[in-house]
Length: 78
Image (cartoon, rainbow, N blue to C red; front, side, top):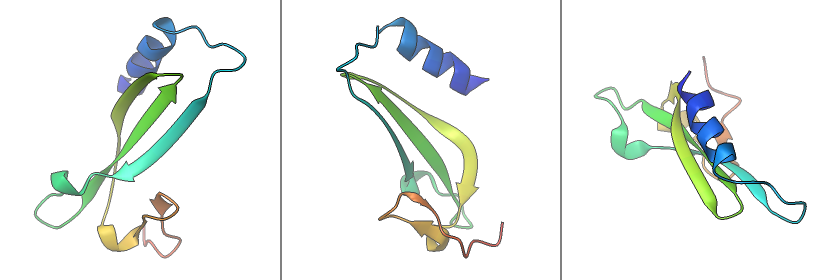
């Protein structure tokens, strides 16, 4: 799976220290929307100063994306 490869590379290139920060961010990549307006959801994992980002292989219409919370709206039909 693509996620495991990317995440594995992130971890193998870094050794997490107790005082090191980690963050996970999801966003809707609107520039890659298809003709129907559906856009892929991307994920970025940051470990210290090392980042990796990848597609989650999920798509959603921007009308159902909550950009404040960076998640799919509860009103999404799928």
